[in-house]
Length: 132
Image (cartoon, rainbow, N blue to C red; front, side, top):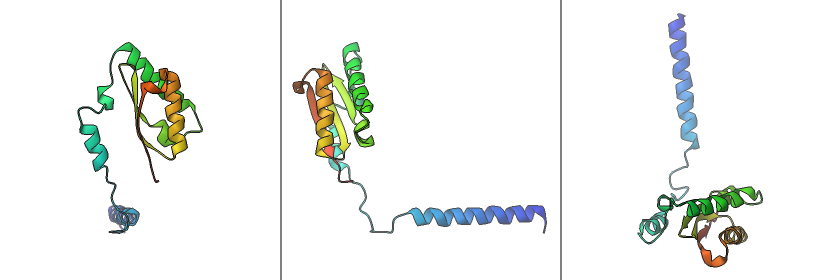
């Protein structure tokens, strides 16, 4: 068999095996409901709701957001979800957004943020508890 023909057969075999493998990773139709973030997306489109792109660029708010994020990431007892909470500082008020695994984790995040921000009245929590 010629080398070019052998290479072509090998490439075709690998490509076919990859396609079959990729199809096996797909969930069967109807087996899992697609993720629905409609409510969260609508909430975040509201002009009155702070989003990460509205983070203030003044020194005090940037520093405050940085300190809250640092405190959350430093706590190794928190999940990856908790470490990825969105932290938005505006005029000294910290908004927390995103999913966490439990109410205890939500409370721990809020407490850490309040400690850094100077009190619970400086925290606006929009943390959701995920069922996953």
